[in-house]
Amino acid sequence: KGEEDNPELVRPNRINKEYKIEQNDLTKEQYELLNDSFSETEKGAILTHILNARLIAISPYLSPYFEGKNPSVKEFVENSPKLKLTMDLIQQNKIDKPEVGQIIYSELAVAEFPKLKEYLVNEIGYKKEEVGIITGATSKNQRIDIQNDFNSGKIKVIIGSEAIQEGMNLQ
Image (cartoon, rainbow, N blue to C red; front, side):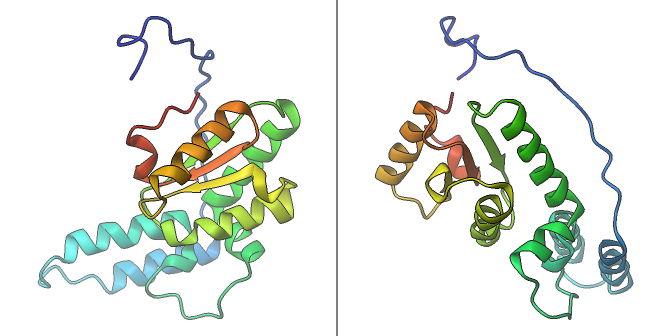
């Protein structure tokens, strides 16, 4: 619910910034492989193509055409332009405003959320208990615990799927 539904709700001033994310060579290669394999005569090809393009935008390692070795967590993030920028911004916010909570939302690549948490812990310097993950598999009690810990400041970062939209009060 927003301010229009709850006049007592106080939200911080919102700062909107746009970032242009340059593709790296691995990302470009995966997009090329995806486009080269596209066949509009296949049933559902357009929807599959769009989904795969969205996955590549998150990380080139999520491409169905990636054939290299499985990347380490650090490689997974740092060779993925969107994830790397996201982590850089989180790190900067951690420095500038350490008391402020942050939310990473994605409806895709939910299986990769533990990698993001591991990166936040190992590379950005959060404690394990300062990063929560909420997905459709998270029980209602776990969601409430994570919500309460986030709102009290114990959890600094939530990585969440569409499940955080359902009845969550993250302020």
